[in-house]
Length: 304
Image (cartoon, rainbow, N blue to C red; front, side, top):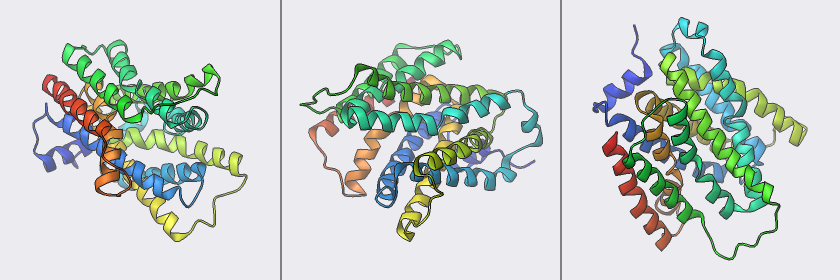
């Protein structure tokens, strides 16, 4: 029998079982951040709907191409298959659209700040749906990460020119991301295959993304320059790998440990923007965020 995806990762890393989820969650956060930077470059060549369609499509193709090496036939008859399909109805397409709408109406500062509720939702879902035990270390670490992301995103002199109900847009996006993590964790307990969980969700999400693109642009995407196609391909591959790494972390660890660590991705985005892409400046806020995130992750990892 071929090795499972998790066994492959474990053999490559030679890491203790207790430490592996924490390291994988950090790696997923860094990869999502790298994908965000690549996506920002890709958006110079096309619109957000087309970029989202390509990113989901490339990730879906990646999963189908690797599926024969890791999937087993009995996965397709599992009773949790509809649950995995439900994830694809709102993640990543709907949650991404809600997030973009929140940024457009509220501005990036308020929208990003409210998005920091995601790890709080994840902890609540982990306790309520998965009966995971919340310790003071995990609670304090989660609060520290949420505060760090808030510090990174907050700016002064923000004037309200939008209805209060618009606050629900980024909060709903955060809730849907957290719910997707929780449902993926439930699915992985029955089907221990990070690739299969991602494949089903993205296979449902892709036709929805295509329909959304046709609704907005009223045509199939074309006339994208080669440079744009290159960055769209890179972004889709990075996001696809990020999701696999995150699912592997969820399979091997607890939701209340993995999800808050993945949520520190904005910090990696800023650091990559400065050191790799040369588009971000290191400020005192970044230094404060680092000082909050490092001990917070250490607290969660210590408890894990």
